[in-house]
Amino acid sequence: MSDPIGRSKALLDGARYLTLATTGADGPWASTVNFVALRGPLRLVWYSLRSARHSRNIAAHPEISASIFMTGLPGFGLDGAQLTGVCVTVEDVTEEFHRRFYELVAPDEAVRAQLALPREEFAGDGPRRFYQLEVRRWWLLDIDRWLADKHDTRFEVSRAPELP
Image 1 (cartoon, rainbow, N blue to C red):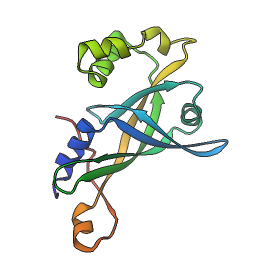
Image 2 (image 1 turned 135 degrees about the vertical axis):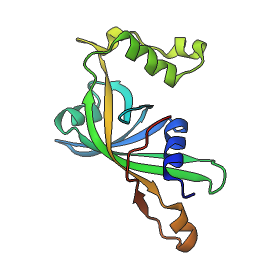
Image 3 (image 1 turned 90 degrees about the horizontal axis):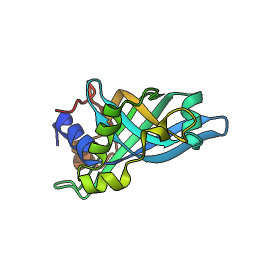
Image 4 (image 1 turned 30 degrees about the vertical axis):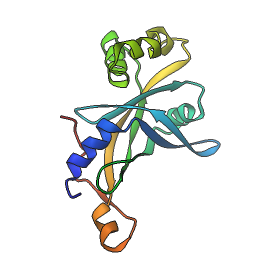
């Protein structure tokens, strides 16, 4: 369990859902989004309706926290990460960005064709936007500590995990 970079990469490669913690005029809010990870520097990307509460919160307060969690894994059975970073709206959704996002969300071409929304949805008066969270800090569940004394703690990974 002691390979934090390997565990982090496994979470980024295997998990598909990210729970965001945002805050706004109505107070704190948690929401779960389908994300993909991009490398160099580590960025987590998803899209949401512009009118969604978490989207409005991000516009007002772009520093957010989030968590990733997976179960059914070999060995201990679960793993998770908590993170903080700064979130921005992707203003220029290029054809390449749009294509790459959907390739990562749905590697199967037939599934991708069913899921992919047109680029126009993400620009101008379109109802959706892509969001990009640049990860600043990253913590992992301290599985070794749990196994030793059942203390539910986290430890910070000294560098944000990059994808291979």
